[in-house]
Image (cartoon, rainbow, N blue to C red; front, side, top):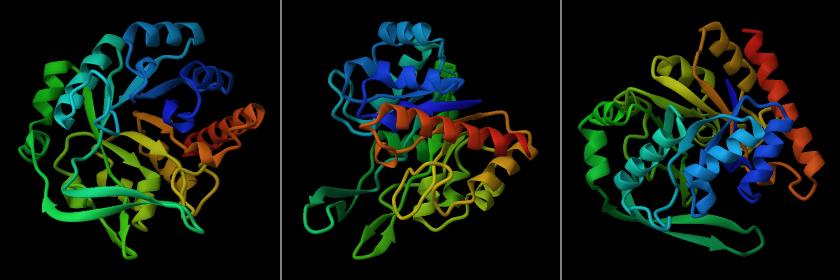
Length: 279
């Protein structure tokens, strides 16, 4: 089933994103929870879903701890997201891996502005780390009746060297989790082939974040160096039954032109349908 992640257009309000997803004929949406009340109010989200006839099938845990009224710790945020998914009838929650080191996030505003992470070499652990280390995700899934799909995370660069600031982010480590979200652009940051990685992890992959990589993350599926058409064909051939969310970045489209955004979303959906049906 082909969905649109609301994170694809996080600079828009949710009603606008849902309207575009419905007009482009996506089968549903993945809601990314953030600081905005609208992304985590079950009554409002259900009304929005009904108005646009667009089921909410996946909920994504918040990226950051600064969500008003929500726990600041990652395990607390995961539990709160699972409770929200229960209220919405969403059967799957996407969870990020825990940070493994402390770090300072900064922004460079020089000739080529960019965001950077300055790592502080001091191990970071906690209850969420312990839960994942001890393999207790299955018990949490049973408690809430919801699938928790852990997402592979991107490489960060320190002095030009790719590093992982997350625990359990190697392919061998990911096999400890019963269910996975395969993020293709994150694989691209490591120079990995998504077709090969899917082949290794396919028994655990229940959700996919689909976007391309061209040096920048979360490009449109047809715009980048990753063989996403081949990946979709392989998944179709395998009889993949999970969900696929188009998860681009607003910078990948002309957000100032709503007609152009709609056309780009339609092209992304056509790309997915064409390759997934040709497996």
